[in-house]
Length: 297
Image (cartoon, rainbow, N blue to C red; front, side, top):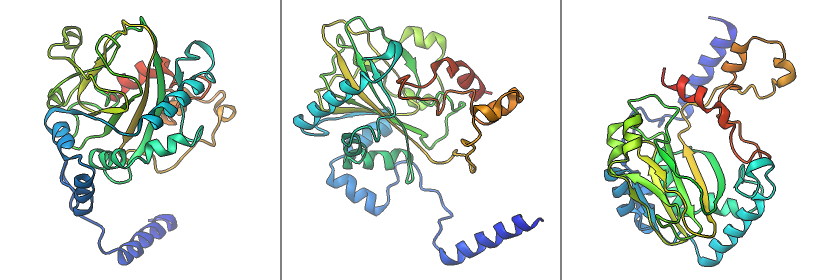
């Protein structure tokens, strides 16, 4: 064993001495700590968590005041104008830090409690992106958000998505659709199931509600068939488990020039994760086929 490895073992030993209560047993899904259970009760979220557990989704109304919702909507629309190219006016990404209102969003007590139940302590903000859908916007086909997780999906939920509806959600207005109970399949829908959409229902709700679902539920949205825009803030959190130990972001494109393609792959430069830019207003969707294909191997 080398010096570095010996030092690492020594460090771990010292950490364990100072922290004898490091747990050895995993808390199971929806098994809440006493502190979290108390918070869930105070926030009146238990029925919503029961619905997520049993059916894979829920809708939480009145997540904020009408005034806050209106301000959030205005901010999202304003920031879509800073996006360049085809998504200008339709999408705004990397929102945390671009306006203080988004700090209030992600620190909303109900959102924080839901996230801890669904993705555990230490959950990571995976995506905070606004979308503006006009009349004529096409439907989004059924999928599971854990699309870069191979099936069967693990018992512990990996990804938790919330859509903050800044406008009323209706089917003709292009609201989210879900297939209740589809999370129990623990897999991605087949092409035939995507086409059939059997059992899909609209998540219709008032403005200032959040539609929530776990990473396994099959969902999409309906085409928008009415005038005006549907403004939504998409909020996604993930478990901390699969972060890399080392971060190689300092190795830039200049370093990678003329290096083997395999180096680009192992550094994550050829998949869509982490590829979001403010200018683009989204991740690099051209890299999605590789990402989803590799994840299923």
